[in-house]
Length: 450
Image (cartoon, rainbow, N blue to C red; front, side, top):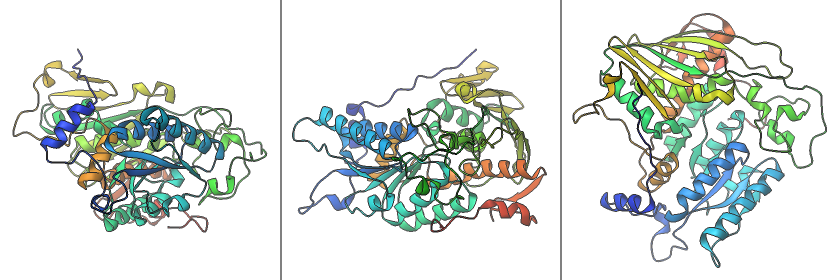
């Protein structure tokens, strides 16, 4: 039997009503935009990385922010064709939404540093390959911008530590794109686990899809529209092939997702989502496991070299065991990915659009007053925009993104080393293992150091 909950996005009217009731002005603009000399009351955004997922996030930003004073005014991508497409989307949306006389223009940049140098831009989305997360994100918060950053937070653990410090030092808002925290099903499952509805939790299972396919290593001519040297960024120089970057004819799944120099594979691709929920439901947002081990399959697949199937196990100080494993299915079957919370009275499974308990009556009663209640967000992008105005932490702040991503990185390191590792979550270092600690970062090719 399934226990289901319907999730609905707030309407503009209900959202404004709740904002006013809470004493929050229904315009998410920084304070400097108010006053007699204020040139505008709009919050202006730039979108860095406008490929497959980047355009999806950009569209959400435009639609969710249109009626509350948020505008996209600039886009940036190393592929000029994709940047041009994004510019057209923005200007088409502005023209249809706001009509004659409304702001329609959208500037295009290849170099994100030029976009960040604009004083009139207040926030950015960063939706780039994983090896390009930390550098523009740190630059953005140093430039005084608020950031919506896609998961995983960073490629390396060391980058995550530095990003957390930069966000807090600059007092910026950063929302990680771990949107399952804004899904009612996942929040409910975590609340049931934390409130003892399943008894004492002993095991959490994070189930993920696996990768497949082969990447063609044959060198190709670099397309004129792609700044390939910049795309490589901090990673080693290697010959171009379309399978290394992204398709030129469409917005299909890019090859970099299966190349270890740019992405660690499904352990971070889907693990950043599922381990994030495991951490949330284990009350471990500010910490991590104390021990981890794992194995992974790394078959020869041309230039694709991330793991396919894997199995990893982490143990927390409270005795809870987190099992991370692939389903053996491809990403197209990602709907099968989810999290099991298992206790001595029963268990609960949560996935996108589904929550299921065994026995079913364990979750029939809603969370009561006095029980643990988690941060409630009904819309991930709106939550981010609201926090720009309130200056309060969003549902997936930088520290949460870093800790959840750390579990993924630790599992990947354990797979590569093939031995059990001890982790100190307070010091954020492996215990007595220089080789493992050496894998917490990687050599960044100059000038892209942090």
